Structures are given as structure tokens and as C-alpha cells.
Image (cartoon, rainbow, N blue to C red; front, top):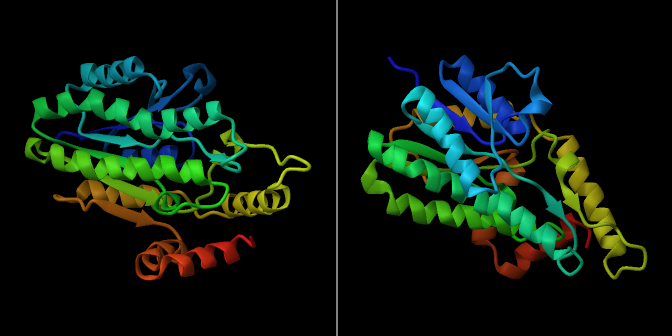
Length: 269
């Protein structure tokens, strides 16, 4: 049976790399992307190609590179993303634009680039990696939550628009996993004398602690593999610790102010 061809954005590290290695071991032909190939000259887990996900032209070029080599592209995994923390009021607007360009517009560029190919070949699968944080507005993570939440809604809409083409679109929302996202994350400085100084400082320490003690990203890779095997994937999948997944259930069933109080207590605000 012909190998399925998979393209993973942000495949050189973290969750994307774990997914790529796992799928390669399962017999898939995997391509990953990175912003700069020169930085990964010794990377040999699977083939890397260059992509600036914020550029529609780069997205189109990456898809064309894969399809020119393989003749098809069966699975697109929109994994590339950046983190951002800071008070809503104090976060520079250029950083807000950057996180949306990467986490929201980037996957849209990729989906626009790959959909014509998937229609021509009679089907395909797109997996958008969002976040459990995208289901709720978290203090000092509001812009990150908003960018991932927006991608989740686009997934729902586009899934219905493309159903007749045999294209399946789904969303996998991870919780906290041990990756290098904190190293590349923008965080507004904890400014002395700021109205948010103490609360933001405590919250930033808590966020970093969660990332540093996060679970093995191979859990996400295994979830991706299970989703690829499904004939009719669900709209949304969650992967993470029990309490992280429970937080979404609680938001659905609890009164808004009660749920807000739980978050305030968790972040000690």
C-alpha cells in the first residue's frame, strides 16, 4: 500500500518533531517545516523543508515542493505556533499581530495552499493544533487563548465548507507539554510600578512551571496517529492531563462567575 504523505509545520522541534518521528516509525512519508534550514543541517529524523508560515507565498511553495516530489499530500498538520504572555493593556500591538500572524493566519495560508491539491486527489485530512487554553480566556495569556480559539472556530466552519470534497478537518487541542515553546515565547516584561506587576509576575512563574513540568509530547503524536486512522474524525480532540481536560467540561456546566472564580483562585489573583 502506498505510503501516506504528511506535512507538519513547525516540525523541527517540540510537538511537531515528536509527531514526525512517530509517524515516520509508523510508515508514513513525513515532511516537516522550519523557518531556517541552515539551523538544522544535522537533522535526520525526517525531511525538512523551509517555510515562513506567515507568508502565503511561502505556504504555497512548501505545498508545491512536497507535491512535486510525491504527487500528493494526504495529511497537513498545522502545528507551528508561538506563545505570548502579558497584560492585555501592556502588550505591544506588534506582538499581538505577530502571534495572530503565526497561530491564526499561518494555518489559514497553509489550508488555502493545500485545499486545491486535496480536491484534485479526491480527499485529504487537515489537523489544526490549537490548545486547551483556546477554550477559555486565561489571565495574562489572553492573546494566546484568542489566537488558538479563533483557529478552533475556523476549523469548525471550514470543515463544513469542504465536507463535499472528501476533505476532513479537525482540531487537536493539547494541554501543557514539555517543549521549547517558552524559549521562543514573547512575554511582556514584568514592569516595576505597573498596575499588574505582582499578579503578572506570579502568573508568569506559574505558566513557566507548567511548561517545564509538562507531559511527554509523544502523547500528542499518538493522538495524531489515532486521528489519521479514523474514517470520520470528530471536530475536536483534547490531549493532556485530566484536570486540564476537565476544565473545559467545567466551563460548559458551571455558571460563568463560578468558573471565573476557579480561575482566579488557580492563578492566585
